[in-house]
Length: 352
Image (cartoon, rainbow, N blue to C red; front, top):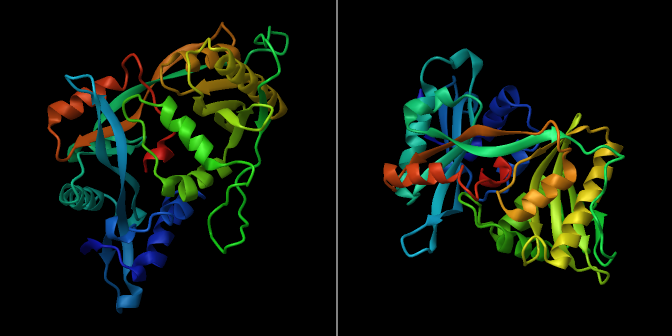
């Protein structure tokens, strides 16, 4: 068995492994947005009779991300460089041999050499990763029934802000590309400015230009994007949701500056709430899941989407953190902050 960094020759076998292990249509396209992906993909290779017949039987890849940390003694919030682990797989006939554990060890060594402060991953099988140093953290998730049609809708003081259901980012563009292209009437720069101004909770991803231009359109293409706009078309808020059967999952929110009662901000939240409720009814969704930072704007949106009765706030513990260059105590403090007063983060895809 050969453990090493992936090469271009490994790609067909690597993709075959993932196709057998995951039902995730976006996995390969998202992976291919990362220009340095092969250098950060550890594979276990079973040699074949010829090099062309070598078989990838396990994989671990990681991607660098910059995340918001926790405020220091002076009140300033530092950022962390984190290796997001993804695409962890092993061939069914090779399981039970510790291949993933060995690949994770190699990946952590790569992260350490690259200066990562910590590593982060999301999983439904935490027992696989605890022996390698990862520990779970919890974030709040609110679930409940959608407000019924007869419920009082949010008051609207005027119609100066209206919501628009955007078309998914297009797969066509003037320049040949395998990635969706933003519509000219949906400037990603406006969404990015709102995102960066709105989010400061621990573990928030600091998205780069490359993320917005290549990775984010892929995620949004599989979701529903609604914007709140002024009469001149400028964007003052946006909301991203996923529809899965009877459940509508709120994945991302950002609205312009001010507190939740500022007129334009409140109008943006009301308009987005009305639009997403209409979208839910159109698709037969009867329940809502909100996974957002604990900030007043998120509370306003939650109250405008969920019926008062039947709500429950639970903890999602699919996230796991591991120290790399930072101390265990520092990462433990970050882990504790994820369930604190401003806790919450968005979909795991933002981190991988």
